[in-house]
Image (tube, rainbow, N blue to C red):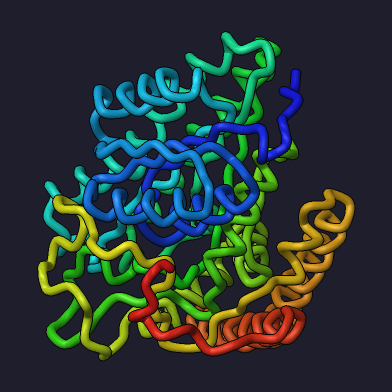
Length: 387
């Protein structure tokens, strides 16, 4: 049983991780459309600044300084939403962090803390939201922000990738349970690819001296994710991938995992490191302390796609299915071409030739996807504050 969502201008929306990046972009767009907002973040100072700005736009906003890893903090978010607005219609679990470094070089305590935020934060928020929405006659939506990393992996971000696999598994299982009970709750998983936000400068880093974390190219504007989240708040969807490159990588991870492994070995390491000076100096990033500065953009060192043809048409299931089918054909062609090139060589040489063929075909497919997207603009100056 699907809930019948209200228009955004009639909704109260809870957003975690709302002081920067995707959360802040979503809050601003929801405020522009007339939603009432409950914004949560570990940074009370930044939340206050965000709330002042949104109220100046005429929005009704309540803020809660909270750590989603704490069940009691998450309960407090729900209590404040009920006391201020009588409840909520959509709950967005967006808070998240990452750790860069080889798997055996990341301290266990940091990895556990990452799971407390990325996975248990989603669990805590989803359970609290479900407890409220299942008792509402009109129901509502739970929207979990995952990642295309849940369909593949990111070397140097093994714990982040694992946490997003866990988020996907939890979200999918919760959706099935709600559908079995015919609860009026729509559950959507949003899977962005690289997004130009402060996420990377807030990441904990155990890279080599002089290196800073960055996202793999191509990157997309955070406003595209905000649009996908608010679309899901009004239109029930199982999951939404943001960015055409993300859709292709998800398809590769599913249909051609060895090809994806080859791509990761070829470019996955160098695409996630930059020599640009990081803004943060603490190696723990925002793992233990909140990231500061209520910014939407992160200053991705390269082109940022401001629009995505795939993201627009993926709102229509038939069109999205056609694109996925085309991606599958491209993957099959890449695999077939690599297999034909192998010939009768030795096993080791066959692997080398297949890897080289797969890397070339994947790069070509990504380039074709880039040109299928709408025009691109350089990323705005990273000093651009939310205003």
